[in-house]
Image 1 (cartoon, rainbow, N blue to C red):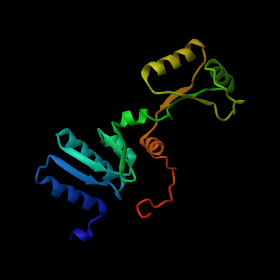
Image 2 (tube, one colour; image 1 turned 120 degrees about the vertical axis):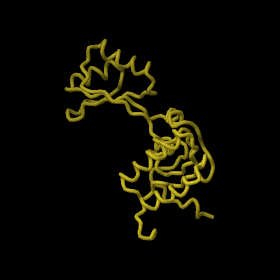
Image 3 (cartoon, rainbow, N blue to C red; image 1 turned 180 degrees about the vertical axis):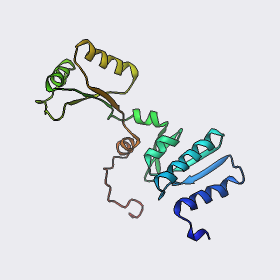
Image 4 (cartoon, rainbow, N blue to C red; image 1 turned 120 degrees about the horizontal axis):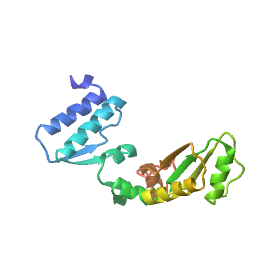
Length: 188
């Protein structure tokens, strides 16, 4: 009996029933809510296969990592209104928050890099040999930054780039804090 199925099995059954008619458009409302990581990944793979086969999928989700991974286009809703739309990359470029993180082997290298880049930093913490440089993530910008470091002969232990994610986009566009205790739907 279906009532005995797990949440993941029910979601798969729902999708299987939908696919019998070979639809060209599918609406999925929170398809991975309550799924374990394996079932969630399976659902993501299935959605990817369907879109590759030309099926249009409208997906609603509060899991913004899921939207970033699956969606060609994203609409951000706030209070029932679209406040932004575009590709995940376009939306992420609209908000600040991207940076290059440079990790150094010793405080002298960190201080040299900060001076070279004109970064006003306090005395380095010997346990935290990292500096963050704001960036838009574009290849020419990254190439120029790394070129300055190399030309200055400052040894870098590791480099990582962090761009804004869709969570950052949501908070920037809606103006809500990480924890919003207001029940916007129930407010009169």
